[in-house]
Amino acid sequence: MVDQLPLKIPLDNDLNLNNFQPRRDLLQLLTGVDALLGGADQSLFLWGPTGTGKSHLLQGISRTIGARALYLPMTELLQYSPEAVLDGVVTSEAVLVDDIQLIVGREDWQEALFHSFNRLKAAGIPQVYSGLAPPAQMT
Image 1 (spheres, rainbow, N blue to C red):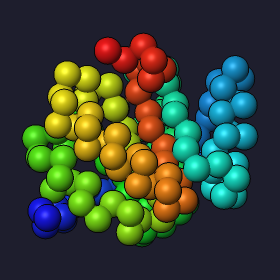
Image 2: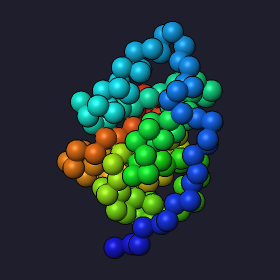
Image 3: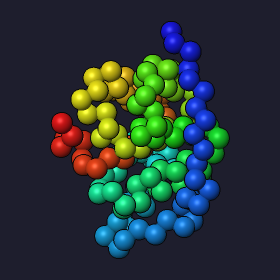
């Protein structure tokens, strides 16, 4: 077993759910977030073009859940081994993976996140993923 990498990834203090302003066509998204935070759903996948607030929303959810939420911005984590980042992930209250499209073509990360998703789902731990396209279109 690999020792878990201590992540020193600070959340942006300006990004929270109180100041998230979705476009009108995205208001249904907040219903999904409320269901996730209320324990009704276990996973949520957000997609859309750059600049639509996905990172803002993930950081806001993380801040709302608190210290036991694990925010994983793939832009900063691909340089590490997935085992070092994801080991012990099931001890979190929630896992939020930002910019998941960056793992396309990275079999090590794809396999590790696949197994983590299944472990988290089995443990009932909420998960939120964000990307530029729906999962079926990421190849």
